Amino acid sequence: MRERDAGFERGVVAEELTELENAMVTIMRVFHLYSRYQCKLKKADLKKLINKELPQFIQEIHEPQVLDQLIADLDINGDSEIDFQEYSTLIAMVTVACQQFFVHKESK
Figure (spheres, helix red, strand yellow):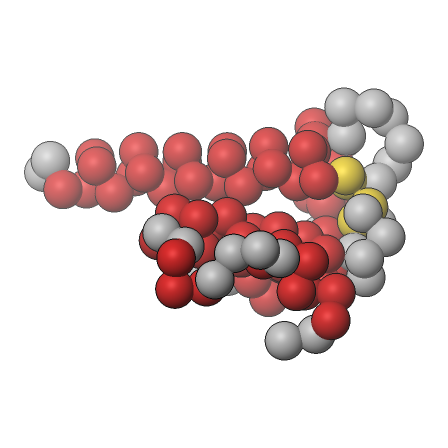
């Protein structure tokens, strides 16, 4: 584990974390990995994150206008970058969509 990653778990023994807490730590680690610990994702960072970390849940982004629209939809503060709160919105949206898909699929 990199030294910066350890900050997410200071004072917490990994074995003490629940499954949900581990998932939350992973969400934070992935954000900081792709933002290079700058707390903001640039357009290229977001594209790489989506294509590498969400390939089963989001179609790979090839068209620049698709990425531009996604950033416009997420970028609440209008700075053309995605902060952690905006990233969390993306994660929540994808999670809700996947949950709805799987529930619908199971009910058939």
